[in-house]
Length: 348
Image 1 (cartoon, rainbow, N blue to C red):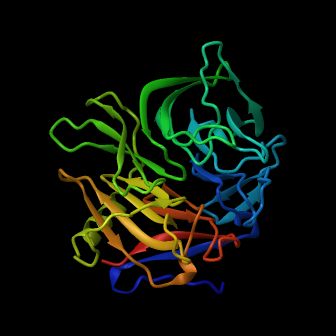
Image 2 (spheres, one colour):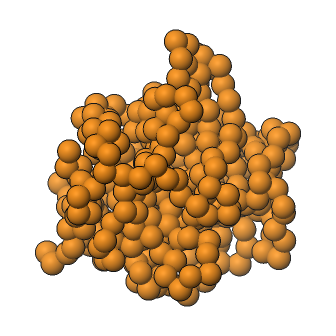
């Protein structure tokens, strides 16, 4: 398999390819781990396309196999987000369907392999439309939605924050506006992180999607309110702690980044790639950023990469089994989607 290993010189990290399949070549898709398998839904197959894909692909990391899901009725979507609910349903929230931005919920029943269009309750107050937003799981029945909202020809100066309540038994959903706002963001990422201290609570932080480099708080919860368990990753956490203490990275956070990836690994938010909001000709990035919340205030660490073959935008990262996986995204030309699955290796 002729691929670039992408070792970032002395900075001590690399994306190691572990699988390659044309079915994985897409960007602005969703990627969700459920039952030890990764579900990739929709996305754009090539740069310049307006019509999103209407298929779902499943990657089994234990055997390295990639198959197209045979369940009929997969909705065409890009610039959407998705979350696993009840270890059974994959809920796709909002996104672009080729003609408009949506604020609906479509769910894949992974046991029956059937797509379902869930319905809003009578009290549902949905956004005008969602794309390039984030959807963060707070519990098995509750998600927090933040980011761009509005129709194709409107873009508000602010973004509302919504709680999305799901009822898998009734196949219903309900958006509730939280009454607080963020700056207008599109293509940002979100990370639910514990706050330090003897009785840690949780914060939902938004990174990027606008010209500001500072993260923004989109929700705070006291100790015990959030019972969602993070995926255990003791080895990767130890490696990240060594990397940030190696003095190889600079103390610099991303400035004006969008359509990057973000995964939470214990006290760390790991960001990769994306597009800079600058007028430079070369806007696609291949850098690794780590946000370390172990102390107050948290610290940024920046680890650049010299391998132009690793530039990515519209990709996804997912944590599973103590490893961080990278899926899809357009490369340096903003048009060609990567067919690779990679794992983050740290050399410390």
